[in-house]
Image (cartoon, rainbow, N blue to C red; front, top):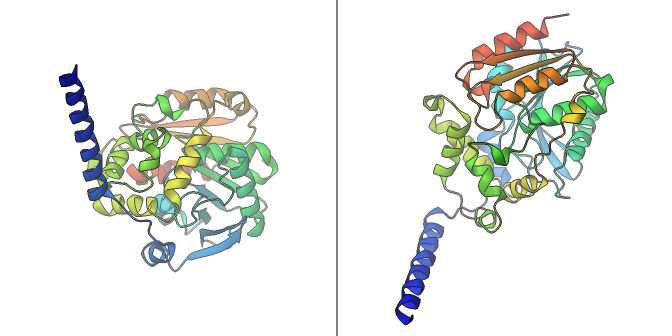
Length: 316
């Protein structure tokens, strides 16, 4: 029995030693937002005091466009995910995009509320500040969930809706990928990642959302990695994951806004089967499935995405 106890003690000591070494090698301080602004705030970037935050956004493109496009990114992303879309559409359209609370340069919500009700209120308040009365709302993943919640709450404000691999029907905890999300939802372990955030973990999370890993450049990993380290964002991600990804499919049938659904058939986070559920639930909807593309089609297949989107926007 004593020998067995010594073996257990040795294993425990080895485990603690490994944790210590991991902490030493992968400990990362928060990055001050002012430092990140030097890297990722462009000349078109603006900052809007709103709901206790300083919201990073960009308002670009054709200023004469009376019904602007509003782009809403997903979990752990930022407005930079839409760069290619803006490049393709800005000559014809006014395009507004923001870093959501908890992410990017905007950072955490002081109240720590990341429910869909909060995000709906946030989008409404943001657009009121910009005096946008009617718009086309496009959202990816979490941003897709926010987009359709906003369209339900304020249907008179949304001319068209585009859902890109959107959340709404199931929880991400049942998905095959999303290692970063799983860690953020795991008690105790999620407290460790507030301080210990290996860059390779961020890269692995990107590999979970892409089909073609060759499109994942070092600069892309750097964007996601450094934005994650923005002061307060790691704690905010944990708070966001605690909010969960509720099954609210009963609400989706209430969407009356003309809707385009775009999905990558290789999405490991939200399976392509959910694209068909959205199409079935929303009466006035169209569906476009991208072959051999993952969770972020606008990043992984930007030309195809912009072409399909342009065709839809040109429809009366």
